Every structure is written in structure tokens, then in C-alpha cells.
Image 1 (tube, each protein chain N blue to C red):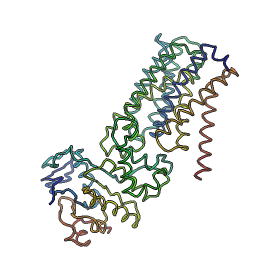
Image 2: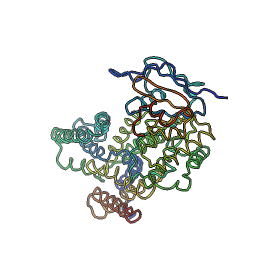
Image 3: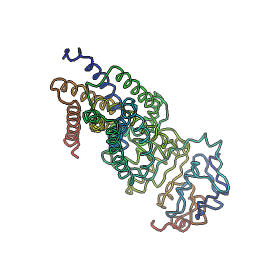
Image 4: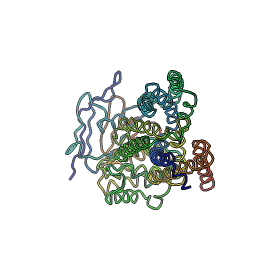
Amino acid sequence: MTEPLIAVQHLGIAFPNNQVFKDLNFDMQRGDFLAVIGENGVGKTTLIRALLGLVKPVAGQIRYYPNKKAIKVGYVPQFRNLDQEYPLTIEDFVSLNLRGWRPWLSKAERRQVDTALAVTNLKKIRQRPLGMASGGEKQRAYLAQAIVQEPQLLILDESTASLDNEMKYELLDLVENLNQTSAITVFFVTHDLPLAKRYAKHYLALRPGQQEFGQVADMSVEQLKEASNVSNV
Amino acid sequence: MLAMFSLAFMRNAYLAGTFIAIICGTIGVFVIARNLSFLTHTLSEIGFAGAAFGIFMGWTALSGMLIFTVISSVIVGQMSVKQSRREASISAISALFIGLGILFLSLSNQTSSYATSILFGSVIGIAAADVVRVAVLSGIVLLVMLGLYRPLKFDSFDAIGARVSGLWTTAISVVFLVLVAMSVSVAAQIVGSLLIFILLTLPAAAARYFVHTVSKMIFLAIGFALAGVWIGLYLSYLTNLPVSFFIASIECLFYFAALTYQRVHVGS
């Protein structure tokens, strides 16, 4: 039994002199793992912004079930400007995303942080300054921060782009595990078609002026490449 | 040492200095995280102009400082949204305000010794009423910080994460700049407007090398600031030399110690 989470219906988004989407349609079920693939500039980030309600559609609509407020979103952005001197521990960094009003963390919030660190395999190095962590550990900390609020929808915006191959799979294994055990719906924006093929259940291939939505199982990497026009597989 | 506390102005200086150290340590952690050290330097100069303006108008120096620093920090905040433009626009504003400070001082017919006390601070000048003002302003700053703690922490230590998670980051920036402006005006009472950025930047910049959570950084930065102010006041009392000299030296000592610690401990 699947339950809908988000349905995008006849969505049109345009900026002055730039029609980004025209009649875009797809939906996401709870527990879905959607890979959004396409070349740079095709509107992947704009689509994320539209899902978050930061861009207003000029046509069509995005429906949220049961409603937009009820869906908590975790977001792992593409770039973060944290250098080697970044001082906070991994644990403190992860807890930044908790929204209580009191300055200290409640017991329940500390448990949330513990859980996020545990599922991202960061418990052992929770006291390490994030600036001293490796690229893969940093990316896992970003993931932990995004899921600390126990979101229903997790958006990964090219989050694997800066990682080497081994780390990419390590990170996405964690995401897949979350997707399967906690039924977090994943919206995975990527250029990396083998990754999309390996982990996603559905794909949304974006090309200027057209799009294709379907089941990943029916497609080979070559077919995904053709659908999305992504050249550097 | 006890003889020092029998003097009313020394008691006042210690009381005011304690409040100042507490708010500077607290605010400073966020100033450093947000890369605003240069802005606090500018606000010091703007504070000097404000103090001169306050005297010219026949108000207290603190009122003039508050008006100037609060208004200009909001303007600077708006102007320097773009990182690339930040340094140049801050330099321009800083030049304008130093000029205005000199103008108002000359218009108000104050002697140069008065300018010196605004610029470099003066322990003797602190009356009981000043202590009350400093305490009230510090209380306001700390209360707002407490209410704003989590969003401010998120925005300061992970601006990108805060923005994508839908936090109202522009509002946080503006409120924070106003808090910085208030702290600058308050702290100028003791260390003077020229050296105020020392207390706002160095204790916090040193603290981040020793501890790695925001709350610990705040406590350690307050500790460094308190040590600087208390020891500085005592040495100033003993030697009759300017307190701001001692505070500056002590805070620099903490900062260089922190850098050395980092080099030895982490090797970078």
C-alpha cells in the first residue's frame, strides 16, 4: 500500500525571459526514493525551491498530503563553506537544526541528536571538531543535521558531487537505510546516473522544455543517460 | 588591593567592567563566527563620532553613541549583504564617521583631553549612574540573546544550513547588528571607543581554539574578557597607566597563547 506525499500537477515556473518548467507532472509516495537527473541549468534547484514553497508557480500546483505544514523537510545543500578551522564539534553542528526556544537541549532533543549520530555512524567521533573531519565525515554530518528533526522528506542536492566513489556509496547506503527503515522519502538531485540507477525507485529526467518520469527498474544507465541528456556518466 | 575598592570610582569601574566583559564575551562568539571583526572596528569609530555628537547636543556620550552605532550598523548591514562589497563599504563609512567625530568635537568646544577619554576610555569617569545604564543595557542585550539563541547560533555557525531550513536569516542579522551596536556603546565606557573591538573579538577568537561547542566558547570568552578587564583595572590602579593598554595587552596575550596552543596541539 502506498500513500501519496507530494503530487506535482501541471506545474509551470517562469522567471522573466526564462520559462523553467511547463506542465511538469510527477508524484512521490511516502517511502519513495526519487532521483532527479538532468544537466546543469535545467531547473533542478528551482524545483527544490518550488517544493519548499520559495518559488511561486505560474501555473499548476504542488499538492502535499495531508498538508504542507505537516511535512518536515531535511535538506542537504550542495555547498557548505566550512573550512579547516571550523570550530564546532560534529555533535554541536548536528544539533544546530533543532528548533526549541530554550538555549539548552531537552532530554528528547538529546535523544534525537544521538539517533541522528548513530544512523550516520558518527557516534564515535561526535566530539571531533567538524573542521578536522574528512570529506566523507563532513557529508555525513550534514546528513545527520538534516535528519535530526526527523523529517518525512529528505532532499539531497548534489550532495555526493564532491565525494570520491567509495564515499558516495557509503553515504547513499546510509540514505537507503533511512529510506527503508524510517520510511523517509528521498528526493535525490544528481548527475551521477549509476548512483541513480543503484539507489532510486523512481526517476525524473529533466531536459529543457520536457521531462520524463518513471520507474528506475525499467531503465538501464544508458537509457537514463538518454532521457536526461547527462553527458558525463 | 582592598584600598582600591574603598574608592567609589574603582568600585564603579569593576562593576561596569564586569557587565561589559559578560556581554562582550557572549556577543563576541557570534561576531567571530559571522566574520564581523572588521565591522566592530568600524562601529568603534562610529561610536566615537556618536559620543562627540552626544556631547555637542548636550546629552550623555552614551546616548549619542547608541543612536549612531545602532543606525549605522543597520545601514552597514544592508550595504554589505554582498561579501565582495563589504570591506570597501565599511571603509567608506568608517572614514565618514571619524571625520564627523572630529567635526562634532570641535563644534562642541571640547578640549582634546575629552577626545582622548572618548577614544581611549577612562576609569575615573565612571559614575554610579553610568554603572546603572551599563547594567540595564547589558541586561537587554543578554535577554534578547537568550530569546534568539538557537536561531542566532544556527545562522552564525551554518549560514547555508540555516537559510535552506527556512530560518528568517535577514531579520536575525539585523537584530544581531543592533545588539553589537549596543554592546559597542556600552563597552566604550571603559576601554574607549578605539579599543572596544578588542573585547568583542579577541576573547571569542581565542576561545574557539580551546573549546568546541558554542556554550563553552561563550563561557570561556567571558572568562578571558573578565580576566582582561579585572587584571587591567588593577594594574591601571597600581601604575596609573591607561586601563585600555593593559586590557589590550592581556587579551592579545590570550589570543597568541591560543594560536600557539593550536599549533602545538593540532599542528596547523
